[in-house]
Length: 69
Image 1: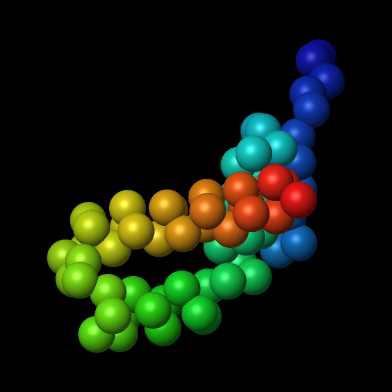
Image 2: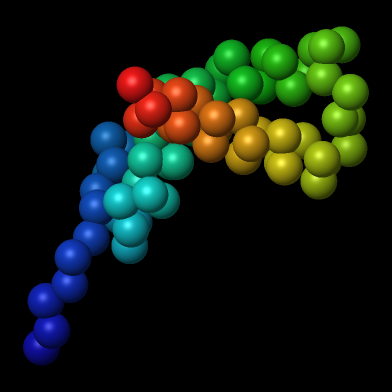
């Protein structure tokens, strides 16, 4: 048997790395506002793949802002 290190987020999901867990928790906390922006006229990226890239970029930006302080 082998013991492993994992990270559990607030919603009970298990992540292999701390970075994955941070991204997931940020996505949970900002889900509504990110979707509001992505569905607004202010977002020029309307295709699903582009929205996915934009969502990940916004989440990474929010994590970077939080950690850069």
